[in-house]
Amino acid sequence: MLVVLVLLATVLMRVAIITAVVYLLLPLGPTCPHCGAEMAAIRNRFFDRLLPALQRRWCVECGWNGIVRRVRPAPTRRTARRPLIPS
Image (cartoon, rainbow, N blue to C red; front, side, top):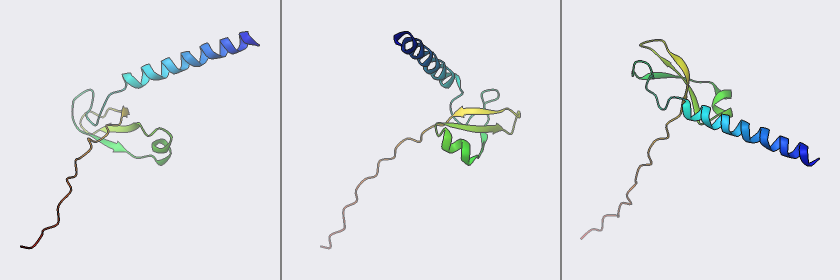
């Protein structure tokens, strides 16, 4: 039984490493990896819910389509406004 658990653990670690490497090899952001132009997003509700960190994109310039890593927008700082006090 211990041998089965060790073999299962090595298989799971191998799958985790391969998944991490493939994720890091995907292009980042909405620009085309071939020509550098802005790409159009292809919406798919099932794919977006299954893998929210990835996004399908299509380049209008060169026709490349594929999966890219989704860029998270930078958090915007909201300043608290003081109410105006009449003088």
